[in-house]
Length: 151
Image (cartoon, rainbow, N blue to C red):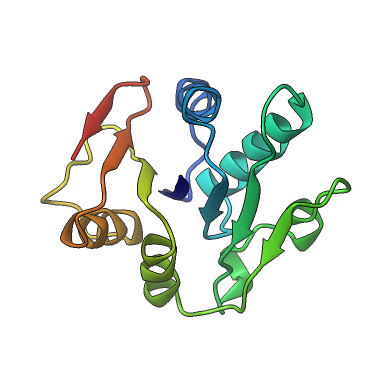
């Protein structure tokens, strides 16, 4: 399975990271795609690298879809891994990059903020969730308390 990820620029909670790490363990995706921004993308990237370092499973490739606008991008030094397994794609505008993440994957995980919901929030994260649903891809939205809503 190829797993896509989207999330807010806010730092995710430990409950969200724990949920994602457990998802890696249970589902063992072969690829993990994200958008390389600060906040949720950066923490999810570190969780994926840490998962790979555990070594008790198949290796998961990390595919990075960076934005053209680098002011909110995670530092390049934190993207690369000494063990390899990270592919960095050509930068694209935010919304095009988000659609590419969905198009390249089988399933999407989204880290949301408390109170966010599917129909009302206009953000890159929710644009990506709505696009994934329009493409008939399963979506898991993980809230700060670790609660998951599946679409």
